[in-house]
Image (tube, rainbow, N blue to C red; front, side, top):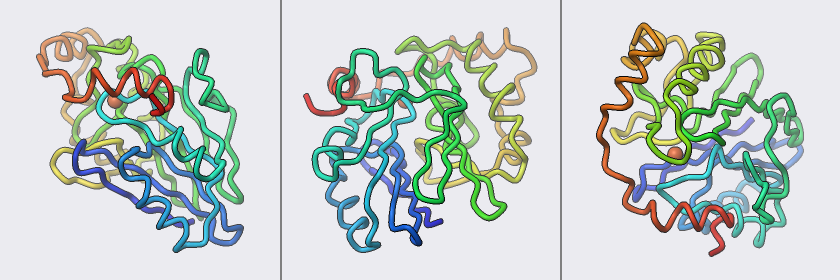
Length: 231
Ligand code: FE2
């Protein structure tokens, strides 16, 4: 499997292109609208047809490329709660795998950062990858103070779902603000300070006191992303 980690320097967002080079098909996770030409170029250079565009959640900090990619490539789109979203072709559902050629994307519901947050697990020749969105970041986690975020739920998603994965699982997060590109579940279990807060109550207290400013594009990004980036 081909894995490319792509970066949007304006919002510190990581996007992942997964390619099955044998069957010439690809999936993309958390694409950013302003980077679409770059994705199209890569797909063309690798000779891959885009079959699935997935968002780990409705983002508050950048505009998704789901809608534009669907227009340009005919890809299927996937989002957590498409209810009112006619631009998302498929709802994500835990236990309902997404098959793209030989790539099997397992869907794990990991709410807490938002109530529509999902992680994607992929196995490739014995190596497991977890695309954790903003649920688990390198030495951190996503915030829980908007979009129906909930620190208690995030604690459960981290401890009962992501930390149950094998320690050798490579963690590919949705963002990094220091330029760290990847980690493993074992590394995060040991060194992520938020995973070492010993109770759910203390974790909730810690998260309630972060006092973070809102993302700078939030007022634009959230409404736009509710229409897959097309408004
Ligand atoms: Fe987010």
